Image (cartoon, rainbow, N blue to C red; front, side):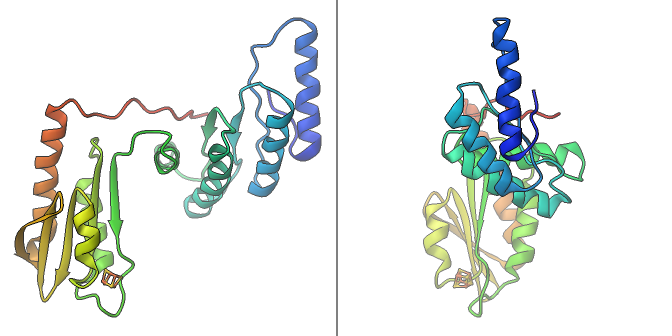
Length: 226
Ligand code: SF4
């Protein structure tokens, strides 16, 4: 059931619940979606304080992909981290597959779902000796669809890069036209800059094959569409 947003939405949702309850029907889930994440978060907090019914979270008409992703992540992040919310609906002016990807990423970021591919890439700075943005994009595209949990660090220099690269399952610290490739904390080889992406993808596939043979695969998606 859906109430109107804000305070009146909360009151209206609870009033509608009471009508069902009068007839002994309690198999109810409540949604008070709103396009303003602040209004939406407040409404769900009030509902959670006043009833025990499961809650379906949504920021409605959240907008184009960039804006809608941020609004949804902010609102769902606040509520889910407080233990409020049982199902979520990401609503973007973008293909439904993108909505599902955003929803899964929000749940993975909150550790409410096992993490799969996670790219840790530096923001680049005056020390960078490689085009970090391009490198991170190419590695992300090359590893898209990876189903096993894998943390890959893409770092732009050999000053601060190795620390982060060492902590990841797989990483590169770039500099002087080369890339130091790390696997599980150890440098396994140094390759020319032109070979960084293909080497990372190759090593990622080896790690993934090992994990898959151990039976490490994430569970089925638990995002509601619609
Ligand atoms: S890893 Fe190096 S290039 Fe990247 S932000 Fe840090 S210092 Fe700058």
